Length: 428
Image (tube, rainbow, N blue to C red; front, top):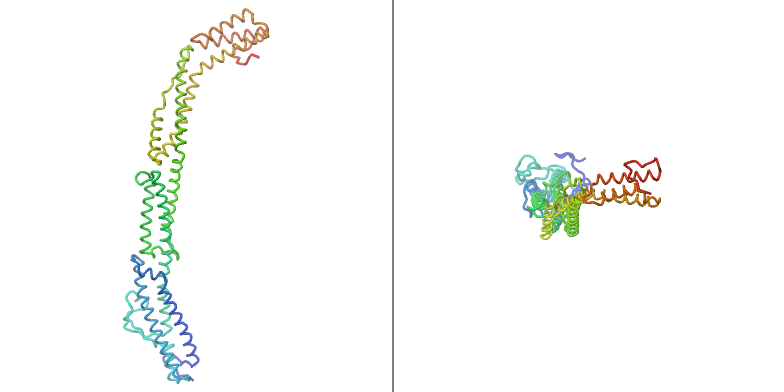
């Protein structure tokens, strides 16, 4: 029966062989992990970066932990080598050798230097000691814990550096392209809000990239890179792009819109000129009629049109855009007002023309019935005609004369059924 020792019953030869095989596999796995850590892109970047903030603090602890990992790995390897040498002395180890192997493999047979543990890693090893004796299992658990903490720092920094700087660079390149377009249409800082926004966004992206490079762990949240500031910058750029494209559209359509504005204002001017001429004619030809005054040409609109032409000539598209929007609406309103003014001024002439047409229509009706020579009809016709063709024409008297002629015609054609005084129908 195996003798008991400080680590419990001594291990059997088979137990020792199995433990040595397992610990050897674990030693190989630890070495592979440490070598992979040495080659990890995140670790190499962290070693060469000028860090700040949380990343600087956590990487300082991680670097010390990496040094401890290699030191403890060497201790682990030495202990395993010693155990293998002891087991290899003979095929059937003695009880004394089995007790020694048990102490090495299961007991606190490994001595590590407490003085080598740096201050930043004290929380990993407990109170400071000059040296301590631990088991290989404890040593392995300690290395696994340190390795996990180091990998948290290295992997997080590598993930942030892989996700953000390249995307920021692409966004900056796109922003530079938008800025070139913006400057081509006059959207510049100090002259247009979008120009200010674009300059501010480029500054914020430069600051964001510098922060990401120096302190990547500040952008690690919830197990993934925090892209909130980058996303907001992207949305801002999209808004600016839409504004610049709208200004570009103004540039492309400027000639057509200016040509249409000139045409609308020219038609408004001609219509007002016609209305003023018609007013003079109405005042000369129509008596006792209130004729509305005609306003002058839209000077302010012509001045704004000149300003728009200057903006077009000097390429100030961002200023041309809002000016054209308002100017087009006011020009259309001015043309409508001019047409309404012409209609109002010429209304008396239209009334006189309608009365003349009605009088001639009834005279033709009388002629068809062979009553053109009737003395009463001739007298009333001549009276109405003199009033309508005299200058100035008294519209009220002329209208009454035409109505009297209509009633006389109706009385002769259908005795006892004269047409009403306000009849305006045609003379069929």
